Image (tube, rainbow, N blue to C red; front, side):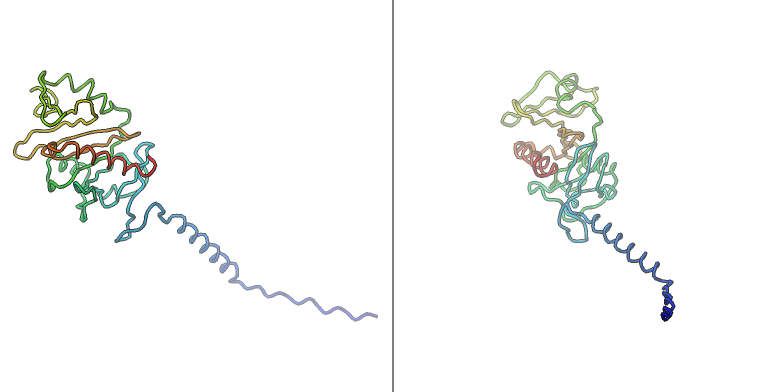
Length: 236
């Protein structure tokens, strides 16, 4: 008669094993999420901020220098209605120390030249299919202009807006045969400021700079071209 088989030994279950497994799985998932969320668009600068931020205006992507952003709430990635910046002129570098303000204050300061006269102000603004800057210059501005125009510098022409119009107290500067157009306030208690606009995708780029810079308007035009190209990123 065969000897009876020894009784099967009971496995001892560790009551903490499921908890440990859950912790390991959760930690691995968290590490994966943290890795995927790490910014990869640019190297880090001092203070833990990326050098540039990918910002979408409408469906148009821009690479915005973080240090150039003037409104603290706009220092984020993703879709935005507008982003306000300033750059030193003529280097076109972001200011080293930026005072954070609201969007309304950014517009007012750019128009009144509260900051030193060593910078050019740039705003990216969603246009929502409004009249383009080119169309405004062709069809709207001429309704309010004086009939006489004069040359002020090289091929740059100036024409005053009539009194009693929406642009009274301003002058329109246009370069004959070139794309440079600027609407400028006149010097008064504060120096005059100019606004030049151009459309890129779903955004209008507003450039504001002192009227006195028009003595070297070609340099200003080149600076705006460089900034527009820089903000669109490589390959644009």
